Length: 315
Image (cartoon, rainbow, N blue to C red; front, side):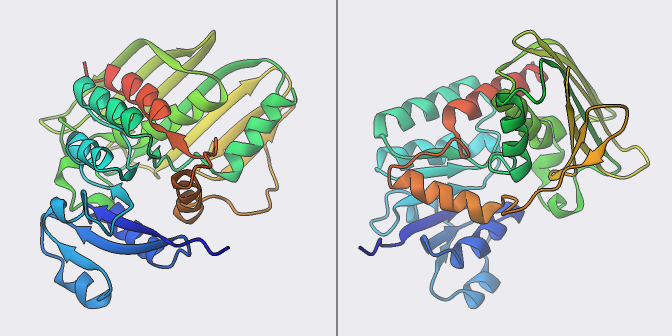
């Protein structure tokens, strides 16, 4: 039996929206029918004449030829698009963070539950090969007791170059690296160790923009979790998540490079297979739209747990 492609509408054509547009256009599970952005995108229309481009979200939400909506707009606008999409019977694949305000997040969760449609959040680590490897190491007790988690982030420039045109990423209202980057590692910790609770969190600012430094002491159950983050410091970009165990410890660097230690030294973990990407997450989202939900695709419940702990830094 042949399964018809899912008709996808995209809202938001910044860095992530354009990347997913390109990916979805080549994905066998999807046909991109519509894409919208506040600014005209004539060059995209010329490149992709089969897609209807516009500046009006109502061309996507509730459209008869759109089964699912991908939302890649600033987080304070997510609810305004997700809620009516669910009410129109469309599935939703949303960029993180889920929302900024408690009210918006509650409205999104309620609309998703009422609709019964697939509802997913695009966390980059949800289907990584390294994530699944550490998950298995915890489950089969190679790690032993989980003793602590450490998260270290550093950015010589914020926003990063690929986000330079997204002015909101540099602002306090919706942006900053805690929302944009720490949220991925909060998700990873939530999934592998348990839901996070903030014990002491702190942001420091230089001027009127988003945070220049972040410090957090959190817990996942009884496991202590520490975040240190800095922007504007000399040195390379750093993305590091470390799980300390009584038998083995694991270090994830640069999103996918995994190392293990069962003594005094780290050694690389050899991983084979698809490492995880927007391609594979679109495959998982397509399966969810068709009723097959994978633990390797973050749902709205996970997105909300992460959002709550992230917003503790901003209260």
